[in-house]
Figure 1 (tube, one colour):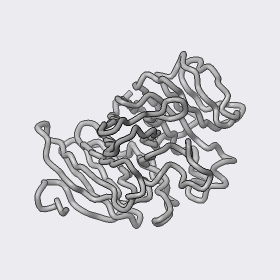
Figure 2 (cartoon, helix red, strand yellow):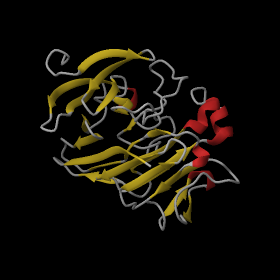
Figure 3 (cartoon, one colour):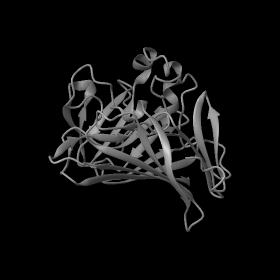
Figure 4 (cartoon, rainbow, N blue to C red):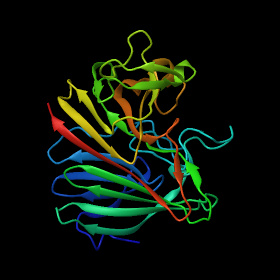
Length: 289
């Protein structure tokens, strides 16, 4: 479905070799890759720094895109899956197409996408992206079958920072987290998340999180707010220097991002009943400090 002639500010383009839909509104510009259905850029009007980090070493498809907002679906990591299952599911390496679009009453633009070629998944999924004062994404999962299906999922947000060692994430204090770097043992979160000084890396799942997280970047003088509905877990990830050295699409750029993710993962699995629908929604907005 071609919308460039139907909705003002919507056009098709190429970024880093990726076919994208570019959405320009009076308040922001966003780019969504058709490979992966993945937002790869969101820039508020007048801003000079993207909210999203997209690897300058990004590989060509079918390698998953490193950066932006990967859609992890219908499972997170390989949770509940065999070892040879594709990491983070089928959605992020599928081709998506625009199936609907409109201009909102508030001057923003809304596009709805659906993936192609993943008929092996018993669930159906659509992604709606709204671009305006904030970036809003809705991932709607429908179970057309006759039995309940269990799933996990995430918006795997790569948020651009000046230096991961100088930022903090508020909204997690008082929670406990499962630490993948410590055999998924449980630890308390004291105060805001900061990159550990003694072992500068992070792969933490916060079950039962509150759904409101703020990434505070004193160098870029901005706060990025992530507000989540329908997502019980938060994930905070950065591979650290040694982990990034083994990742061809990260390497020396590991300090440029931190992933603050809206998820249902770990113990927070979702049971989608027969004929039922589950929706994961996130809103990302930026405030100057």
